[in-house]
Length: 517
Image (cartoon, rainbow, N blue to C red; front, top):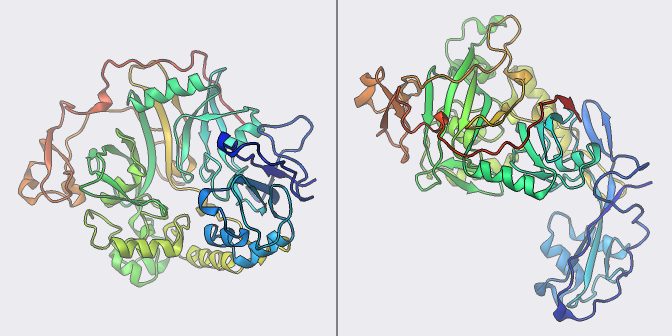
């Protein structure tokens, strides 16, 4: 039995009069999709090779005729408005009945009229995602707190439908309408809240929007992050929504993140050829993985605002991007300095061009800690570009994503009400634990008072104040030049992490439970 999903068309307006009779599309529709699991019906998933997969299925999009479509030929509409497929594809789809109007097969030169309902049935191939289960941190009748795996989008979007957190919860936890309260990027893992009904989702969402909830992330970054507390207050501007690119810009939105290093693991010299390498430049010249040469740090990240890609952008600006970030830790896009300290828009067009060529979800050399992995990645990329073609729909069949394409080293570890009314936390992910034979934290330590530190350790200070590091805490200035602000180190002035007397409604009162979906 083929798995098929069907979108219902929106209700016609009253001005359109009585709608035309809608007949079902051709025989391609076999099993209509319904929200949530159905007793005795098979789930859409199967697991293979460490991945969650969905068999190709038919999905029908239904839409009412838009005003700009009136009086135009059906083939012209599809060819000009939906450019993800070729005109030949749409021509064949119309001729074979995969595109119908009001449930009836029409010729390619059919003129679309006001009130028509256009149906397009596609043979969908969803990308595989991680087979890691969705962890349940806590659940009661009102909310569900989950540990989201990396590499799975929250909402159905683009090529992802069943392979989204929302649909996985529908199918496996039998939650008819899961309502996400906060959002994590597809590549990010960690704490997420779901409301089981609208009131619970609204109440918890308001607490997060009002900044009465403290958020704590863990990241693995390139190089030796300085000790102490680093506060970055650089404003962030969305440069290109389509590519998901955000940068530090003076005209951006206010953003503030507090960072603290938990551990640093220096590069371990392994191959004999590495013994005499004295610099990162020498490593590049010898074809070595440059990030491997710099080692890496585990950093606690506490965002005090909620801008898109805030942690990722601030870490890039400070010169320590997330090690496998496909956007912000990519030398092919940003050059050898990886955008460290950049606030100018002069090279913006070049960056957008380079990023658009590779695609925002590809992890290129950003994943390579061992030289041999570079060739392996390039081979996988070539396989994607020269994959087989689906005999049914002529869609290119891409190879499975590699482990390094399923997420980045950024994890939402803890969410807590500032008054202590509730708190939810996950263990450290595997990539944040000490490597074999090394000493390091196996969990995030308790927060401490702010420590005196300056951005001179990052090479971003005002040279005139370089000698004041022992008594001042330096905060990156909003306009991005070398003039910096100073704040008292021990008082905690302006540190929202201390918390004020704010109202936090406990979203749950039962004991926490640990389980997996």
